[in-house]
Length: 268
Ligand code: ATP
Figure (tube, rainbow, N blue to C red):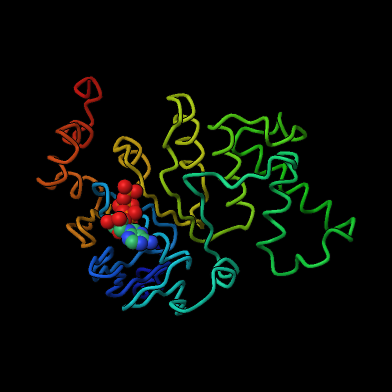
């Protein structure tokens, strides 16, 4: 039990109220409400077209809801720009990593850190700030296992390494809420193992919202899960409960009960 829970509920890092987004006659996200405490490890799962990416877009601010509200640490950001949300602590890692191939691996992170920090203006001209950002960027590269490639052009990275670089770039802004869009997509088993280790080592000050099709990654990373179906919340709750929902078991072809009961030999 945290000290804050004695004094009452902590302010949610993320609060969604009746969030709705329609495209013409199709309602992609339909009345989604959700409250996540600071440091949450939350996954959003569901079949193709369930509205998962649209929900992440609404939270990040690249798309706007037709109805409903979004609050970040108690501040209403429903109409806020992506830049403002970034300053307030939202960072996002993409399915298709946004890596600048002509820059070195290290400078990709330096640049990401500068664009996130409010005092970044003019940092190119300040040797002391450059040094600070470079040291911080090097730490983030260490975290994701790319330190040995710091001075290589980012264009030389493999797909898995680009995903790790994108994750390091998201971490460079010291986010309080990290949005991960299918971080395990296209990764080798070895890269997924590394990803799990990185996510497992994130500080409790960073809350994570993860959209992911790999249910074993969800079971490992998330302590709570929202299952979307046709834009609506089918179930939200602790991971084991949500994954045990009959429609979820069906959707994941009965691999889920083995994960929930934790008998790895039964998974194959
Ligand atoms: P997947 O797992 O396949 O990525 P998803 O759960 O992320 O799916 P979304 O990409 O959010 O689902 O899409 C939800 C629905 O909204 C789909 O029917 C999709 O075709 C539709 N949709 C998403 N974006 C748009 C758009 N910009 N214009 C029209 N329809 C859209």
